[in-house]
Image (cartoon, rainbow, N blue to C red):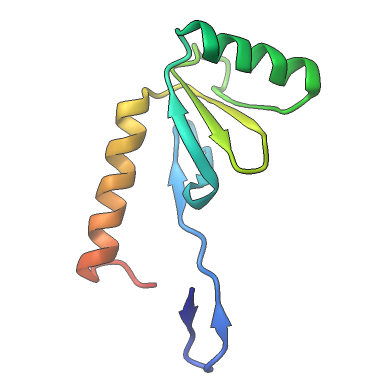
Length: 101
């Protein structure tokens, strides 16, 4: 949360680019996992049957599964370590003051 110029308390949403023009709110991500393990495959299958899947792969192969705090499952076409690196870079920029809050 931040206090804006007008003195009003506001929440800032940090958006993360996850490929092919897709972005999501990084503050809502609970976990980033590889889609190759049996538990993550089960998670994706259950999400599909329950209608909780958000496919952001643009037709490409799923390389990361992101679990959101809303219970939704986001499929991404970039690797989990790439997403984690982007989050780390974003955090460093914010901490150094190079990005406006």
